[in-house]
Amino acid sequence: MRLFTAALFAIVTSSLASAQMPVSPETRATVTHIVGDVIVNGQAYEYDRQLADEIGPRLTGSANYVHAVSWAQDKFKALGLANVHTEGWKIPATWEPDGPASGHIIAPREQTLHIYSLGWSPSTPASGVKGNVVYLEHLTPEGVEAQKDKLGDNIILADRKSLGANPKFSEILKALDQLNKLSVKALLLYGGANGIESATALTFDGSLSHFPVAQVGLEDVALIRRMLEHGPVTVEFSFKNRIRKDVEVNNVIAEIPGRELPNEVVIVAGHLDSWHPATGAQDNGTGASTVIEVARAVKASGRPPRRTMRFILFGGEEQGILGSTAYVRAHRAELPSIDCVLISDTGAQPAKGWYVMGRDDEKQALANVEPLLAGLGSNDTTPSVEFLFQTDHISFDLLGVPTLVLWNETDKYFKLHHKASDSFDSVVQADLNQGAATTAATAYAIADSEKSFAPHDTPEQIETMLKNASQWEDYQFFKAAGVFP
Image (cartoon, rainbow, N blue to C red; front, side, top):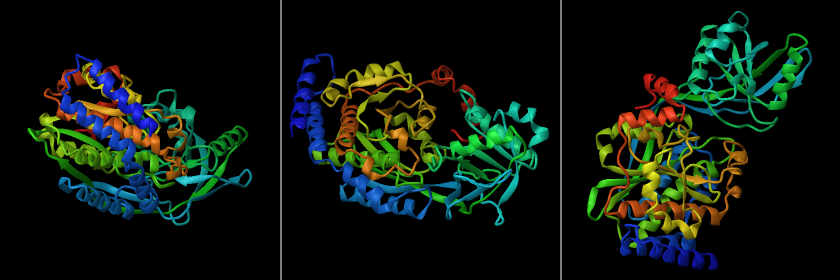
């Protein structure tokens, strides 16, 4: 209770002290009520528990994901939100491991490997994959070309050095395509420490890899490399994955209609899907539960904002930001009416403020909101673009829509991100509530403002942003491949 009292006092007094902030007394009073409700009565922790413990891992398109979609619709309906519905899109393939992988070094001596199927890898043949290992020095088109005479009909090994200091995903995909043309048997990719799976995929559109791709523990990779210095190394491995082609996946959408400007929209969103080693409590159960908690608290305030607040839970984020990109494509004609998109996807450590992805105009606009966040300790911004292509804001950004991504501490988050330790016991209730309160206060203040949050970027400004972030080449590759709108 002392935390709530201190936060409430700081919010009110710092707001009153800011004469320049164009936030009405009514907006300020409602934000104060919403923040207090989230801190004292917040349900995000319980929502996350239900997602993680009762539904479990939510691989896109899986039975658990479908269960989570129904669960989310029921939550929105129970809260009394309007226009609760789903919107479907197609994923080229769904993927789930059908039991554990197994693998061994068989020459020059036998050694059991810590090995897992990488996400969206095809199954191995029933008899497994067996072959000599060739270390790929550079997982780039040039690197494959340099070693092409040694790679065909072998199992390829790539480690951190193979990727280089600043790997570009577009270059990796081009290299993988070249490996496929050389008819390699499989790819062994480095993972976490032995026994620690760190789930990911080597495709960016929900399609399957061309050939089996396995993740191998760091110590096992180092062992194979040392063995290769003294002669040939032969390995064998096998795994089976459950795969379905051309599956419809649903996003979940709900609204609180605006009282004065219902055709202008502020979106609060996160992704509902997760990886499978654990239950996705942090990535992204915390983000999904934040979206629902913001909806609950704003609805409970009894004062709808000027603009419509739209709450979206996307699927397919982990396979290449698929659900949000599908949404942007389907609603492209409506994008000019979207005032801002707020995303939560970096776990539930204390929020520091917002990523503005290099947009100085957004930083300036948030200066009017920051006094509302001072008591929460989240009244800051960062121009960092380290996560520019990493979550569901990017397709909106690429078409000029202003976006904000919640800026959390992430040191604990990345120790369990995509791993078996991403379970509900890692979530701290007070920290989750603080992030949810930050999101609710910011989103409501923007939605209730007399003025729009920030202008939509022009194509020229978007190109400059991508070049400044050293992402222009990747963007052009993915755009040409039809990945981005």
